[in-house]
Length: 544
Image 1: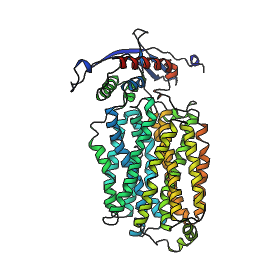
Image 2: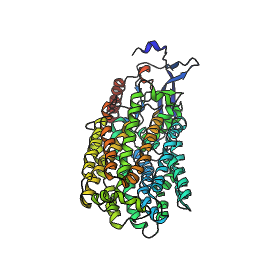
Image 3: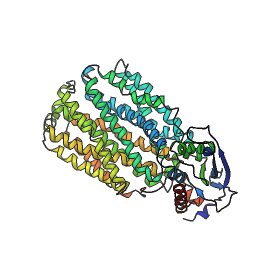
Image 4: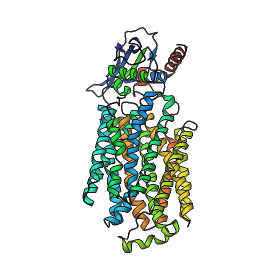
């Protein structure tokens, strides 16, 4: 591409950052000083519609240059990252509990409030509807006002309306309050953005996939709690207990820092360096010295940037992948309780056409149902392990395609008349693979977009996922009353179609650094040069 034809100019704007924090135990004052030069690449737009990039630097050209990835790679993964992992993990656990509770809540309300099947599906779908409407908005907030601000607001929102849901006097109030909970959940995907922007490119894949254990733990925990709470205290207490991880997160938000990548992008270089120094201090490492490259972007979080020639294909393909994976994931989750209540797939297929004759007939989930639901929910854990093994070996794209294919393969036996035990086994395996796929796409999406619109991209992808989630209850809980074979065909067909989509994505992100700005190439920032700089810094750090 001929970049000179775009009438762009590049010059560096540098200043030296001298930062000092309060003394802390174990190090002297001198150890806390940083002496880093910040070279900012500024992007602004003119009235003519053209875009101009400017950078200014007055330092020695031979001085070593650093990116945020170089600094984070030198600092390494340590105590700070463990704290961040657990704090963000509580947000993931809370979201998983709020989502998985829907599969338990439906049968209970069907019996207690005498709700027909379509009203049960509406209760599930209204949560996803709130997520669809809010996710892009949360992405805009995150890209323009900060990841930390966005995450704190949305988790507090979920906690508040989640607690209010426990006092719902009737069906209408429950719909409204769960819809408001869904609006908050739509922003929880920003926790992935915040977490990923504190990780070096070598640790990013492993760490984000490992964080999925918090989601899996939340899914397992809510089923285990339901087994104990539902028969004695009822669904209102279960809704209240599900907000506990969110309450823990809110209590410790005073510790949560803003992403240094976001601060550098918005020109808040002093705070970015303070944050990086804090990470180094808590990890027991020394901040590397050199010229830090920062991309200051004035126009961030714009939807049109997702459809630029560079990202249009990626955006559209990821939208479908997110839709398909959420549709299949929540489909198998909601389908599980339906099949377990039927006894086996044979009874489900034979009795499907009989249900409309008595749409208010209900069956409470028994202890056997909860136990089997718990076992199938445990499939989340091997699914995460599988994703962890695949993404660092065969890459993100092939891992996604494999997960979709294996999910389709293990849905096929459900067409046959099989008993309860084989039914549980096949659902377990299918859910493990679709869970693994969910974690892979959750990793790939923030890697492929630059910092300036990463949160918006994640928000729009999450919104498309919730469209799939919104539709899935009507397929798994309403369509199944007409034909279980048609229901299985819809899920299987969607998954098979999605097998090919990851393979035609333009780029593989395995082993690549996070892109700070779409102007990276135009600014002449060379990854190979940065890697050589990092190698020298790492070697010097080891010698010291």
